[in-house]
Length: 453
Ligand code: SAM
Ligand code: SF4
Ligand code: F3S
Image 1 (cartoon, rainbow, N blue to C red):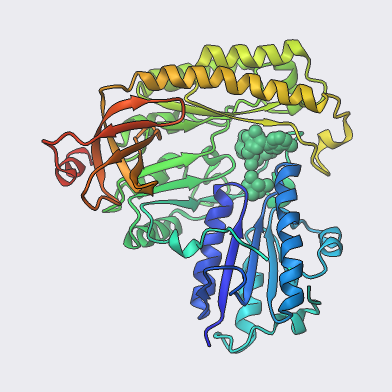
Image 2 (cartoon, rainbow, N blue to C red):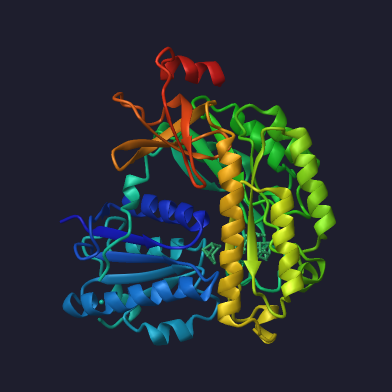
């Protein structure tokens, strides 16, 4: 009988893209997707370390799997992603029922083991014998990734790792140095995604603006945009994340120039206070950040801008936090992802005093959320009555769900099959987190799609 896999993913879009590659490679080895963890022969946990809470989710899942593994000792449990560092002995001790660990981007370790069991197509996944695992574990929720293949909006990791060392951040320690993938490989991957039904591809890198600096022919993000723009059927290109100190004018100009590149920017500021930015080792000042935003808005007038903010990092005073709130009020971002500082092992800041009390961190988080909810409500209200081209990604609670060029979430009703279509939607209601609308009767989705590409 065909062996079946189940992949559970936490963390960022990079992990989602990695999980897709794992799924593709497992399918290439003759395995098929399982609907539930209980019915799988191989369970893969793709993990995240960015904050302690993300690790706790994995530990919770590992706890469930212990019981499942006890009942089914033949089950293989593999753990990959950012929780797996160079030395994962502590993790292995805490989860002795795991058969195999693999580091981010090193899922070939897993695939090699699977392939090695029986000449490419495993008759039996005997990895526990080979790897010396014991048996103990259950999973419920993870989306069957196979459902993602064929979706209109997909992710593509264009590079891995990060050469910066922000003092709070564990990512470089777990994902290593920057490594870009050649443009030709990425174009091939993008074509394959389009052949599978993708209409939009989001290019991912920790600092995606640095794409290509390590490659011999020195392509950059702008040339990558150009190469991908020529792919027929690919209608939208997005990119994240940008770093305020690394974002070249060429990229901003390319967004303005190339119609397939969407006018949406993710530029994490992290703090609105210069002293805190220095402690974070971010490499820019608030003034420089403000100038960058002005430049983006002058070159790309319809730009929407998202940012990330950390509150309550070591020594953050009320005045420093006040500067962050002021920046958020002034810049008026479309979206702010805010997180409470979480000390991460082996980072520079791990040695510092995590002295902002949890209730103060929580109060600052809520203060940012409150201010941003008001700003997002106001900005989104400006969309009322506008007709926005929406790429339909699927349904939610019986309604079509899609995104505008500026990445605003839109819900609407229509009796036609619209997944993968770019549909003109007139916005009739707005809120802080999403828009609602209807398709004006006179315009067919097809006509509009060709009109805007
Ligand atoms: N490379 C991007 C950058 O330069 O901002 C983002 C990387 S990180 C995977 C995503 C977000 O997680 C960061 O923007 C930051 O806001 C948050 N983050 C990272 N380390 C954190 C920590 N120790 N505590 C809380 N939030 C953290
Ligand atoms: Fe982490 Fe900083 Fe690199 Fe982003 S730029 S991944 S926050 S070290
Ligand atoms: Fe988490 Fe690693 Fe992404 S730490 S946020 S999965 S890069």
